[in-house]
Amino acid sequence: MNFEHIPVLLDEVIEGLKIKENGIYVDGTLGGAGHSKQIVKRLKDGKLIGIDQDLNAIKKAKAELAPFEDRVTIVHDNFINLVSVLDRLDIEEIDGVLLDLGVSSHQLDEGERGFSYQTDATLDMRMDRTQDISAWDVVNRYDERELERILWDYGEEKWAKRIAQFIVNERKLSPIDTTFELVTVIKKAIPKGARQTGHHPAKKTFQAIRIEVNRELEILKEAIIKANSRLKKGGRICIITFHSLEDRIVKETFRELNKDCICPKEFPVCMCDKKRELKIVTRKPILPSKEEIENNPRSRSSKLRIGEKV
Image (cartoon, rainbow, N blue to C red; front, side, top):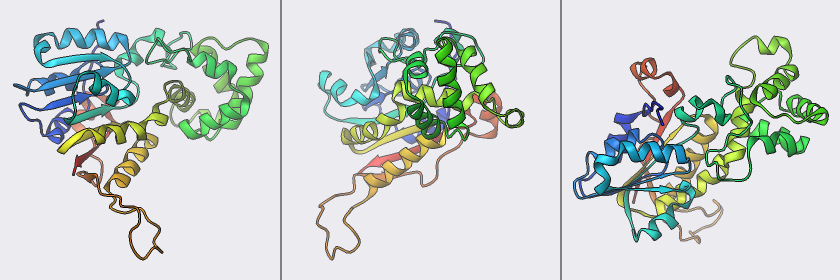
């Protein structure tokens, strides 16, 4: 695989993880191993576990991390299964975990994967190509109300209702098989005036379908809670998001883990026995510098939040 991977917010992640030479770290979204390579370089007797659901990424990462193979274990899985991965490796606790969310650069660049509205390809969008449900299934088999919900909830698309209607009407004539066929339907659904301003008219719809196919938001809160449960005291969790829906879940989950009590305010004393599990290190997310955005425009919307196990 010859895809270029430029890790986003790299210096900030490395600083945020507070890497120990003998620590155990998990990169739950291994990708092209850009972050992982810099983590493992700082390990002496430590260990890096890299997890990814994309077999192309696994192949690339293995090549990139080959010089450090004595310190690296690579696993084909989804980060939602972090606990079971650690159990299989007989690892009880870890010193840090990184999640770099969303679609990766190489997935967008591999046009045949169907992630991009700028390349004609079969509707796929699966990060793990061994799973059953693809973008084709969402577009051609979901009912109109469900399509509308996905476009609204996951894409924040104000034309969700019209786009869902147009998709259902179009597929009655023939299946919508390719990305460009879907783009054509979206452009028909959105009024001309609205299409002439702002981002590409298909951007939000493609985002929404991709999130649905890969269950990206559905698994995020649970994954954060599971990762935090296996952190050592003082261990760090770093999460990079690329849109407001992801960032909101990360922020709210961090806040929940930061609370000492979740009893209703009218209770005279605490009855829940909840204890604070996470200290929020970044009250506001860390954003990329102007220089990074210039060098890597895809970093523009990235945000980094960091928590520490207590």
